[in-house]
Structures are given as C-alpha cells and as structure tokens.
Image 1 (cartoon, rainbow, N blue to C red):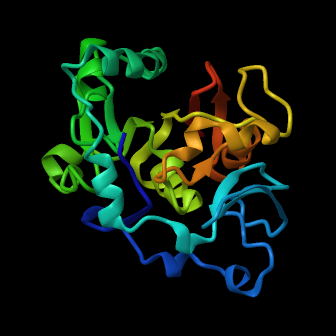
Image 2 (tube, rainbow, N blue to C red; image 1 turned 180 degrees about the vertical axis):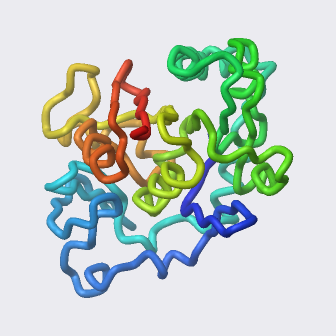
Length: 264
C-alpha cells in the first residue's frame, strides 16, 4: 500500500506536500546527539537496530520507533516507484480480505450513511468499495500520488468527515505529529472516528498481548524491511497521540488496527 509524508492544508486546497529530506533533519542529526522524536518531540531515545545507511530509534517517552537519519529516506520518485509494484485492486479477493477488518471496525462506530475519507487510498481504491457494501456509500478517495485532487473539489470534499480511515499509511509518515494534528483538527468532525491500520510494535522489549514485536524482535521483523516504512507505533505511542490531539476514545481491536474518536 502506498503512502505519505506531511499533510499541508490550505484554505481551499488539500494537498500532501513533500519536502526534501534535509528539511526534516534536526541539529542532532548532524551534531551526533539524539534527534527529536517525530511524534512527541522528545530528545531522549535509544538505537534498537542499525543498518548500513540508517538506524531505528526508540523514543523513551512515547515509545515510537522511527528511522534515522532523515537523509536516509527515499526520494518521492523512489517512493512512487515502489508503490507501483503493489498490486492492489477492489477486484482482488485477497486484498479485500486484508482490508475487511478495518472496514468492519469503522462500520460499527458510525451511523449508516456517514460521510468518510480514505486518506491514502493508493492507486486502486478499495476501502471505499468495502465501506459502501457496509452501508457507507459516501467515502472520498484521496492519495497524494494517485488521487491528489480527491479533496480539492468542493462537491466531493465534505470535510469535516464523520470518519477517516488510513490503511497502511501511518508507517510511511515522516512527520506523524503534523499529519495526525491536521487530520484531527481539519478533516475529522468532533465525535468522528479515525481508523488506523498499521503493524504495531510492543511498548518495550517484550512481545505484547497482540504478539507485536519487542525491541529484540525488531531486526528480524519483516515490516521495517520495506524501505518506505519509516515510523512504527507502540500502543503507548497512540495513547500519547490521543492525549496530544484530543482523542477521547482509543481502542485496539487487533494488533494492526486502532480506532480513535475525536473529542466531541
């Protein structure tokens, strides 16, 4: 699944803006100190895994794991090329089955006919089809690379939405704090639900109740081997986000799904 970096919202236009990797670098990147956590901004972290060109840090405060330095991120062209190798289609039974748990989870949280947004739908939008089959026909498809105008047409935009779904998106975020803040405050209505699908890590060096990998398991974990995956969330990371962005409900129905409700 293909996805994102930083959401930048303007008064009449919704776009994902890509910035050069250097713009994400902190002084610590070059000075040799601990770089700031991309979610909470904390400056205390530990390296849990190192590779030739980069390493992965664990924030001691919010427990986020992220790739560093920022100069090791793919360019937009490299990222798109990787996404184009994915074969995602609403006609693919395997892909539909993969997405079905998120569609089922969000459908239990909103009323029939609720308006929604698939944020980062990829080249073959499928969640909107599954949601329509579950009584939610009004889901806008948006993707910075493949459906960049999905939120620009006033007749389609409809923000704020009753729900926003992000399937295999948030692990691609270079600046998750910025994106979560803008989704919550600009795209999601008060009382609306945010559905997140991403493979999580455990809070610490122990496998969690959902069998999420701990620090010792991280080097062999398949999920970080995709070069477009740069950010990995522990349950504690999303709890921190809930406090930061005003989510008054946070649920973890599975090891890859989280549901958050914006405060009314």
